[in-house]
Length: 448
Image (cartoon, rainbow, N blue to C red; front, side):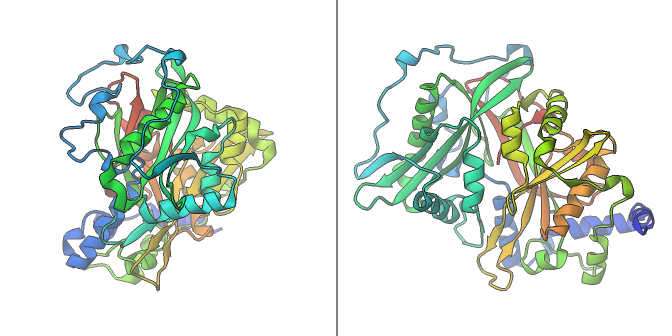
């Protein structure tokens, strides 16, 4: 019964209050200059972490040279293309000409297929990513990809075990490098292609001088090509040749007190913690926003809703019903999906996944529980109302912050729902496909 009044109060913020909200969002953007040097460092590192680099920054020692990428079928940063030029760069799709043996590794290292279903190997992968995935020399924050999350992310329907590429030390079998590929169907304008989603490129920190990252990329490319797949999609927090979209993370605090204590956010001089808590309070949902957790019976309806919605984006994912089952049926502490139905038809769908970060130098805080927007479709309510449902459910599930990239429709609700703009960028890339730079709102793919 309080929902209407709460929403009216929420929508009645004055201009001065909005300015103060922006100052409060400052922990993410505007009041960084007021932080102490130590807090600035913490803020900077967390923003880098939230940029979610999928391809590590050791891909090139000299970003201006791009020696490795200049050997690959990707556009150079200086090239200009138009949408009518969209298509493969290298059209030589002859499996017989693909190298049949793995690329060479430095002495003392060997390739192996990481068996995600083997408990020890999954744990070894978790440790490698947990300690090395995102560069953080000051050791302040660290992604915490849980083993069960990795199992979910890396084993979609019809995945190829040999695309989970590992490097280990011959003598003790210690895993020191990894890159993954999973199959995906992607539409680029009017062309639908079989592609690989490349992710989780990681090399043990002390071995980055060995230049293992380019070899890992070439090796997973070789294995993908042997399956008669010649394109790939990937993201990175750095600019390499050549992005098809330059996106940015936005962050909506859910537990502002915890975020401030962890140096994730700061509040302006004019803002008290009491008021900050009130400003970021998540109001109750209205009657027409009462979504329920997705169930197996909803798969066909969600599949249809996603298919119709994603088709409007210039570059988008094409999910099969089996993939909808895998990626979206709720799994505790991994994926959260909610639906609304009318007369048996799914009308609205919202989803987010869990990716916590360990706060290394704050044992009192321990972990920042972050929810990441996934795929969301609204037809019976506004997109803003749908994302209010997402924030409400994230808060109910004890998340501390809700993160979203400014792709698809996401950017439409950032200001109204009090998201703060992050400093970290996320670039989208297509491998072996000529395509111009497009707006983030034209991208309909989310990589985990």
